[in-house]
Length: 418
Ligand code: AMP
Image 1 (cartoon, protein in one colour):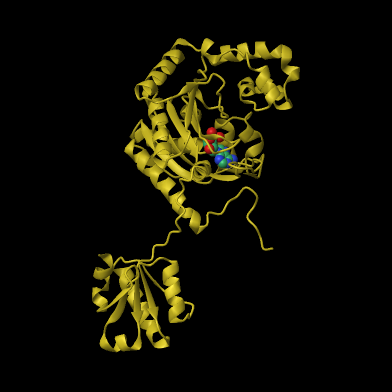
Image 2: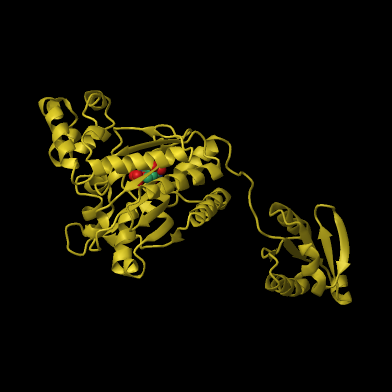
C-alpha cells in the first residue's frame, strides 16, 4: 500500500468538484448580493492570535490546534477558524481607517485536531462572512438571512435556526454568578471537563454534550433573566427583524457556542441528513474583539458554515450533481505520426480562439481515440487523416447526430460554437 492521506484530511477528486464548485460559486454570489467582499488570510497565524481571541478555556485552544513550536514566542498555528484572522488583518492593514465599516467574506480551509468521524474532519472548509464596525442589530439579522439564503439556494434540506443572546461584559458577570450559585452544590456530579470549566468558563457547562450533564443543567438559570437593558433591547430588535423577514427561528437559552469572543447575539443552523453532527453553521456578535486585537472599539457580527456538512446534507437529499464533468468541446484525433503535428497545431489554434480542445497523447488507435472523445463527452470530434491534410480540410464529426462534414481549419471555431 502506498502512502495515504492523514486521518481526517480529504482529497477532493475531480468527480467531487461539480458539487464543490457549485457551493463555492453560490457562496460568492450570495455574499456579493448582500454587499460583502472576499478576503483571504494565511493558513498559518501566530498561536497567540487564537489564544487571545477564541479563548484559552475552549475545546479548540485546549486540545484541537495544530501548533508548531508550542510555548515559544514565535509559535505558529494552522488556523482553526477565520474570524480572528479577519480582525487581525483588518487592524494590521488599517482597513478601518479607510472605511470604519467593512463587510467581508471568505471561503477556505480550517484545521482542528478533532477525533475524525462523519462530518468531523481535521481539515475542513468554511464559507463565512464578517460585518465589522457596527453594532446595529439589523446587521445580526442580515447575516442570518444571508446564511439561510445560501443554504436555500443550494437546496440544503431541513434547515433550522436557533438564536440566543449571551449578554455583554456588563451583564455576563451576573449570569456567571447565577450559574455558579446553581452548579456549586452539585458540581461533583458533572463530568471531568465540566468540573474544570466551573472555575474557568462556567458558561461552557451549558454546551456539554454528556447526557448526565445535560440533565443536570435542565433547570439552570436562563440568560434572559440576567441581560442588561441594552442587551435586551438589542436582542428584541434582532428577533423582530428576523420575524419581519419571515425567518423561522427558535430561541434557545442553552445556546452558548464554543468561542470566548462572542457577545450578545449567537445563532446556529442545523440541517437534516447530517447524523450526530447536525450543526451546519453558526455565528454571532463579537463587539470586543476588534479592540482586543489592537483596533478601536467597534462592533462586529459574522457566521461560518461548514462546507463538508453542506455536501453531506445535499448528498443525503439526492441533490448533489452526480454528472461527471468534462470541459472538452472538441477532441482532435489523428492517424499516424505524420498527422500528430498538425493535430497539435489545430488544438493550439482552437484553444487560442477560446474553444476547449484536447487530443490524444498516448499513441492510441483512431478507434481508441474516438472512445476517449466519448468518455470526455466531447460534442465534436475532428479527424485529421492524410487525405484531408492534402486537401487542406479536416473532417468535423457531430457526435450527437453522428454526422460528418469537411471544413477548413479556419472555420472550425465558428462551427463548434454554434
Ligand atoms: P464553528 O466554527 O465551530 O462554529 O463551526 C462552524 C461550522 O463549521 C460547524 O457548524 C460545522 O458545519 C463546521 N465545522 C466545525 N468543525 C468542523 C470539523 N471538525 N469538521 C467539519 N466541519 C466542521
